[in-house]
Image (cartoon, rainbow, N blue to C red; front, top):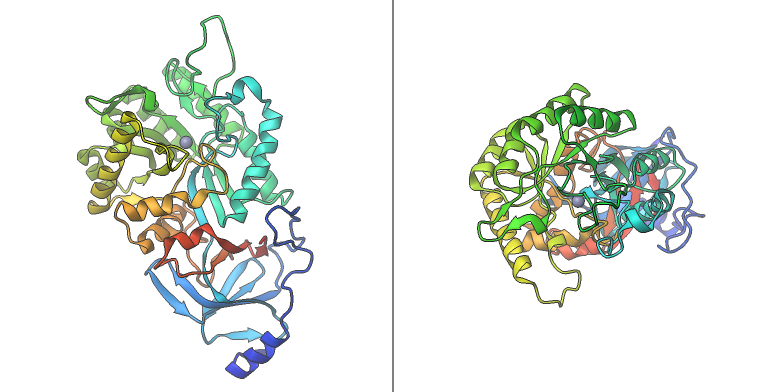
Length: 440
Ligand SMILES: [Zn+2]
């Protein structure tokens, strides 16, 4: 029953090719229906491409066809057997690559949260609805997998949205979530600036003793956390610019307790840590990733390289949202340090996983960090790997995701230009398949 595609038969088939998926809109603003086809389908789909991008080697496979069966890739190559009757998708003028991944998002945040505190002005149900919109924007931008790091006071809304996506109630990327991040009284996520008599819910889960750390961590696990997020240092407001030293929050013993207690439940830890002693202690304690890290010392970077700790730099979020705005002295100090640390991390072989802090940035703008990473010294191929295979490794999903190869899940996107030459091509994703289902 297998039919080998030859140039002649390909032309014949292309001539008969019409709309790929009737009923699925291709306009981003249009209502989006989750396809009824489940992953259990054994139907074949053959995707014709101009080239498939090999993100592991940084090379192209020109003219490759991707054969998908149900939700998995069965074969990839220019000369593969396509079963008769296979559904055909014509991307023969496009560069095709694995679904992108963002390892640092906040689906329950929207830009402007600092001026219009959602804790004070939005209900958790409303923020959950916003998150449903956010994940749809994220998926349509070509990001088929995300790690959402802290619901920012929206309780377990991230768990609800993750599960709703998995149940095919709403379209969105596959997600691992951190629920409420653990912080301290007076630290990051503790609504500063309010009078002492004002008692409101917090962005994070505050814990000020070992017993409180254990209790709040178990509560996050109970209600669905895939990751435990820890605020190991304070926010940008807490940086002593003279010494470029961020404020530590937890003691070394407390950081170790978080990692050990999370490990008992099989949960990895992501540490928000700009640098200094707390970042080093977090790496030493065994966190799986350091977030932001724009002041990491060479000593800490060396320890990360040795331990295989991932770094998720989130570069662009420290620049003003208006690209024409002049940087403040604080922004200059922070972004210049970030640039320097990025170069050191590259030289030292630290595993860098792509993450943006979307939520602080508009959802759907998840491609925003690619240009900065290239500007800071990565090749486009390295930047692409960081947003595919490296995040898959961080999330321990690399057996199923991160590359286009036989046996992996069919998370496939397409762009018009070769992203190995022009990383900006990733801003315009024209085709999105997740788990074998076409969303765009
Ligand atoms: Zn963040």
